[in-house]
Length: 149
Ligand SMILES: [Zn+2]
Image (cartoon, rainbow, N blue to C red):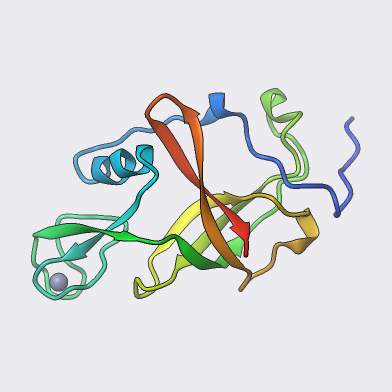
């Protein structure tokens, strides 16, 4: 049995081999921009509501058309958990890690999932101000992670 890391242990990240994307026509623009280290979110061209995750109809006005707009990648932790115990053998060297839901600034509360990094585990809390750091997991695949500002 593996000992639980201390709360001041630096946060780690899950291995890149476990990150698999399955983009579809609605999410491909997000991942294509991510590969270029650009954060984009879909916005309704009719009423300007942000629509994330993207879908065929606006939640506010039911229009279909969207445009992808770039955002700078600042936000606050809305929710998180800290994984202390590796539930898979491949995660043995990756704990603790902190998957989080981050509410983006300037988006009417769009929330994006990504791990918090560059901090000790005990530093993560709801409301923590974070900035985006792209993690390149393989060629043409980058995912958002978040570090405290
Ligand atoms: Zn709309």
